Image (cartoon, rainbow, N blue to C red; front, side, top):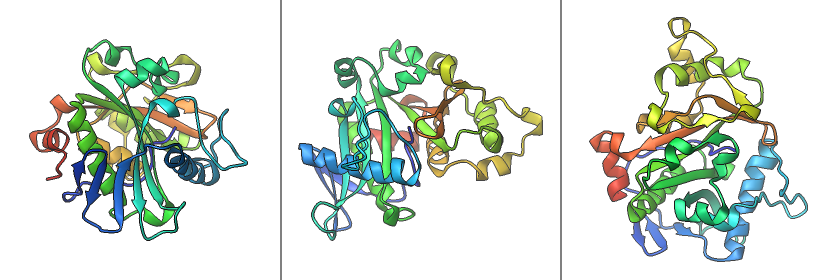
Length: 277
């Protein structure tokens, strides 16, 4: 399932006040969903992006009410970006879904465990956070909205002392041939260390070693990489072994892993303090 869309850390974006975070643009507000209606607002945006726009589907997708839901929703925290200039009921313009280990224990597993063997992470005894379902309303892409969402995420990470973040990010479509370059670049240059390397499950496994390293057009592969994946790599992220073909959501997933301890001091400060450099 996609994480999705463009993101950046260019300047301080938020200050935390309990569950509510006021950010620099007066019309924006960041907060964790606390009511059923706020979670439904997140699910409506997810439907617009992942189902109507990208052609996904799922066992619990509610097409009548235009809600993208799954069994994990009650266990995740839902970080919302609201634009108060919009009509009530349409103010949620950005979403990030995050789940800590204690929440995953209640759910019975992490969401990504349906696609990847996460045992190298879960056996590490480190504080984990799963990221997913990140999306923006189409009118807010390419601006500061994703930066604000990431600022709120940084505060969440600092508040809970998270040490390792992970989640699946996606290439649209099911054919690996057009993305052989990006997949091969991830395999050759950004494979996670063995002690924290998830592996795609056999039922959806897709090798990422499609082009030999010495034959790879690296600049072309970088250009073809989704912006979100590039952003995570710039922060020091790695990928697991193998991609996973997610037929329900019409995408090919890779498992991204970020170890705060392995980040550069500059990037580590983002997640330890929640303030962008």
